[in-house]
Image (cartoon, rainbow, N blue to C red; front, side, top):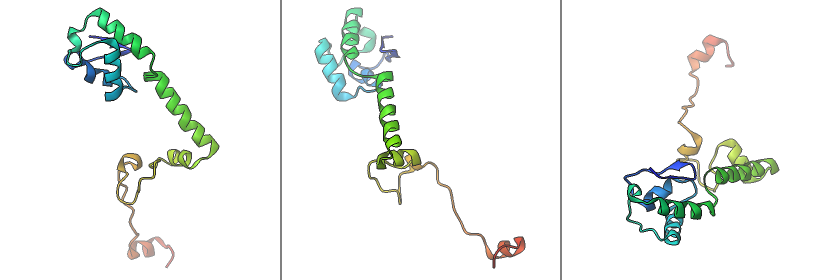
Length: 131
């Protein structure tokens, strides 16, 4: 099992797919990394030699990935919240940040549905509430 930047890459996957397990490496970056390391895309991780793994590791080290990237993103979000920008306020409220509508969707950001209903008239009169 190859270990790159503290992440174990799955053995049975192709190298271009396995590199995407690193935070900050997508399809385009994986292709660039493998081109620079002179490694074939269709190679499985389990068939990589130690030399190929070291070449890939050296190139990945030049990119901002994993913990450093997560820290940078979190700092950017905290900065926006501290200066009171619109995006910072949306982050703080747990709402979509990039202009999406929330009337029908946005369940990922807003969480599970909470049903809000009205109190029936006879319940209000029994509890002595306003009439």
